[in-house]
Picture 1 (cartoon, rainbow, N blue to C red):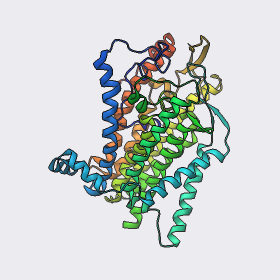
Picture 2: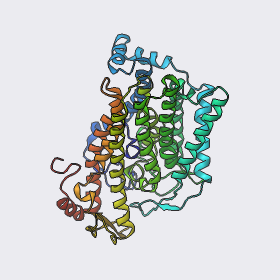
Picture 3: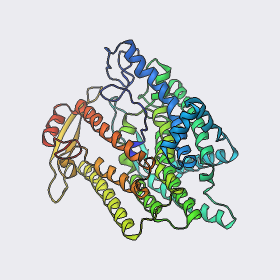
Picture 4: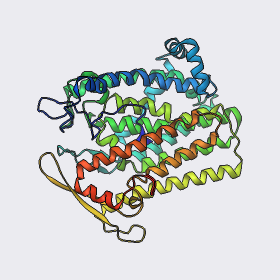
Amino acid sequence: MASKGKEGARQRPMSSNGKSPKKVANGKSLHGETGNENGGFLYNFFNYTLSPLLLMAIMPNFVMLIWYTAVHCDGSYVLMIQRLIENGPVAGMAKVWSLVNIGTPLSLYVIGGFALFTLILQVIVPGPRAEGPITPKGHIPVYKDNGFSCYVISIVAFAALTYYLKQHGMSTTVVYDHFGDILATLNVGSFIFCIFLYLKGRIAPSSVEHGSSGNPIFDYYWGTELYPRILGVDIKVFTNCRFGLTVWALLVVTFAVKSYEMYGFVDSIWVSTVLQMAYLTKFFWWESGYMRTIDIMVDRAGFYICWGCLVYVPSFYTAVSLFLVNHPVRLGTILSLVILGAGLCSITINYIADWQKQIVRSTDGNCLIWGKKPEVIRAKYELENGETKQSLLLVSGWWGVARHFHYVPELALTFFWTVPALFTHIMPFSYFIFLSILLTHRTFRDDQKCSKKYTTYWKEYCSKVPYKMVPGIF
């Protein structure tokens, strides 16, 4: 999800820690760790040239197909595929692109205006100092924890703009009406922005956490900097949080307003909207914790994460709301309340799980979890410079149920904000299916990363908490 998920159907490098195995001049990988030297030419060509090229060619077309399916194919993947087959894949995609206009004044005003607005908020809104985890090279990224304030200001500003435009016979739902143009423009603009990030990382990196694989295609795709900043502005905070996830929230509200303009109050889209907004509100409240996730700690600022947050999140994560605009479903009061309650319960469990880990680490274990003093493993690990650090591995609470149990309520929540669309089409369940695969795969990546970092301490943790996600099953 936001979280954790804005990963899309995009490929990560294939080494055990999720980082590029390519070497630079000093004999280390561009992430400072020895890579896989035994892959051979074909292995490296497939994983670090061909696959990135294919994904960079396919994914921009895929997000346009999501829009095309929802707006022009009645939300039916079957109909969309039939049309592509009838016209041929290339001609079919050309037809899809012919339905949109890149760089229209409206799309430029919407994208540029919001980007400038949210950038100003990121800079001027005050917030306490927050630190990310120390990197293997000893770098500690510092952030201004103003995400929740920026989020609230953005929502209030959107509400005020909606009211103002309504008084003058206009509507913010013009974004829905021209969403194809906006998405296409955002696609092209994000490609250009990633070129800038590639060049910046090669010419003027912001920290020691940078490097090149020697393969410009892979460097563009994966990125050359881990924590790029421009005039003090953290780029990944901007792309991931201030733009990507904030736009997700604004779009689901916009689509709900569009549904209201077309049909009056429809409970299904509002149930879905409330649950998505509740999740995103929780995310921004907890944003400083997000700075300690794989998205920030591992993923470099390249096409993979930046295009994903700028384009893939607004287009794919909002798919259920986009679908519901043209498919009004009347759930009824009882079913609406059941779904809403189940979704809010899932958010609560997910939040408590995150809180348990944070409170244990902030108090050095001197707290109560489920009424008891928590059991922890004091895991030591070593930085590249030989310095030894310590981290607490929590064995109590939800973290004693399964090593990644917090993914379960996250998946449940996604299901509950999707199920108001019922089961007439697969399209609204696209994100739920994607996230299920993503988070299942991420449990393996998380385990690999932690095993390498904590070694024997992680083995001890796994012996105490043997299941990855679902106790007794997986």
